[in-house]
Amino acid sequence: MRRLSSALFLLGLGLLIAAIFQTMEFGSVAPIAGQAINTVAAEQVGAANFVTAVVLAYRGFDTLLELTILFTAATAGGLVLGKPRAGASRDPDSGFILRAGADLFFPLLLVVGLYIILHGHLTPGGGFQGGVILASAFFIPILARPGTSMNHRRVSLIEGFAGAGFILIGLLAMLGGKEFLSPLLDQGELGALLSAGSLPLLYIAVGLKVGSELAGLLAQLSETEATD
Amino acid sequence: MTMDTGLILYTAAFGLILIGSAGIVLSTHLVRIIFGIALLEAGANLLLLLATYRAGSAAPIIVEGRIPAVMADPVPQALVLTAIVIGVGILALALSLALRVQRAYGTLDLREVRQRLEQDIAGEAGIDLPSSSDAPQAVMTRQEGQA
Image (cartoon, rainbow over all chains, first blue to last red; front, side):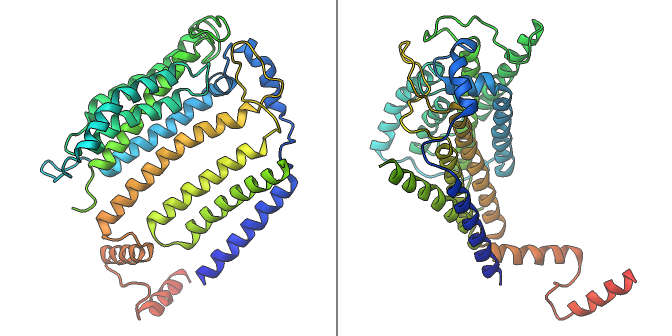
């Protein structure tokens, strides 16, 4: 009976989505809001990457709330998993190739992650993508040596400071009588590293926050035993 | 050419959404349900990008002062960008909850988990399981109480 109702639900959902797809023509959609943003973003925000302009300038407040969702997920993950027992058995270290590879990749991933975060307003990339790369830089050594554990206190300290930094940048703009998250710095020259107002600062905060949260969450998952 | 590409891409988004939903409603294994959520998410992200695709548009980025003639809509790209990262966080949270279920009940099959859960609740409350032979009487007394 439950199977039948589930199958009926899927059939209805499929028909609904197919009906929606019928009305959408591929490749000929006129982007109304996007067109407007594409024409004015270079002057209004000063970021060469318009996606960054949307993420941090036009939807900066939404991005703050999305970071809150990620923070909630990471906190809840830590709450659900709890601390591993003191004498819990860990997997032995992996082979030489994985250990050497992890050591080799750690600085490379760190540099690539930071580069992508810092150039988020100029090239495809930004705090979210670079943050994930930073998280993998800190997580791959744990995969290679499951015995070592991450310093969770330090990770949550970075996370807290990054999150507070994002809000602080927004509040500092309010001190000057402007709106929340309005740019603090000058727009600068389009395409220069130091440009686009406070967008690079915001993306550094986003990158550190995303990186520390994901790394902490993944490390916590790997430290937990499946069975007691 | 573009018509065919569009059909293939729409079919992919349609398939991902449908397979993900099927995994969520039809499967009883917790990890498969979580994978269904991940597939559904991928389909939704793909759909969001396809819905605003413009033929022949370049990435909305100014490189060395050159502004492309036709630029893609940056709004859905920004939405999907954050959705992907949040999806990873949600996936990790769901997996840690599944880990907890596995630790508490020793199984990831939702039917068994539900059975164990009902037993535990009934045991804590000191009543028999609703499916036991005493069930009709229990229903009777409840109706009498309401009347």
